[in-house]
Image (cartoon, rainbow, N blue to C red; front, side, top):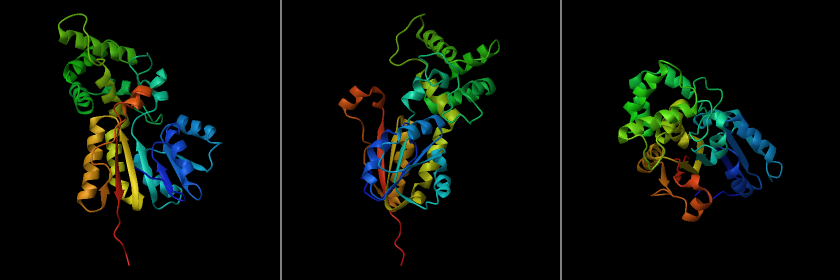
Amino acid sequence: MLDPQPGQVMLDCTIGRGGHMRAIAPKLVPGGRYIGLDVDPGSLDHVRSANDAQSMTVELVQANFADSRAALDQLAIDRVDLLLADIGFASTQVDDASRGFSFTTDGPLDMRLDPTLTRTAADLLAECEEAEIADILWRFGEERASRMIARKVVDQRRTSPISSTRQLADLCVSVYAKRAGRGRATWRIHPATRSFQALRIAVNDELGRLEALLESVGELLNHEGRAAIISFHSLEDRLVKHAFREVEDSGRGERLTRKPLVPATQEIDANPRSRSAKLRAVRIFHPRTV
């Protein structure tokens, strides 16, 4: 979808551990530039240490993809030819218990992708009213038991704060067990899955920042520049779908994907976390000037 060519300028809005960089950067040689953004300083440090073998210089900026315009201005770059944003988060972040993303291992209830953010998931559960917690769980996680979980959170925090992933996961399990009408039940997905997703989205303002990126795509890309967005749940994919359709309907570009590209069975077998990934792409047009 991106079709990288020698000499082009690439903006990787979420460089992560550098997987896409290793596939794309060699195709920009000679003369190309690869710009990598990430909010996680640990990811940027990893890319720096692993970049010795690359055939071109990779320019790194610690920034959220919503601030792509400011990041390019910092590098004195007006527009780029290619843009990629992988809205998921790295497996290393999921597997690090200290980051608080996973309900399978106990750790602090943090969930900040950007460690400079001041509000953690634990802070959110401690400070928000019951109705606000329920709204977050429903809007960002489509959690059907949102009201019951919010009520349980408020009841529990009266005696002790909910500060660990295990506490929240156990709370969600207890709510689902009560709804099932028995002490033990079997579920298709873990009862904490949607609540953890919702809190992560709220803590990091993920949908708001994705909207900001989508609104700026036309200003970031050169004429016939290409953008590809990889999302991992329906809330994100819906935003990308509507934004790219609006670009095409307004004559400012064309969709390169009518339906999202999804991983093949072989890729899912090799990397189960790819199973929910959806990629959509668009090509931007600018009016010709005389």
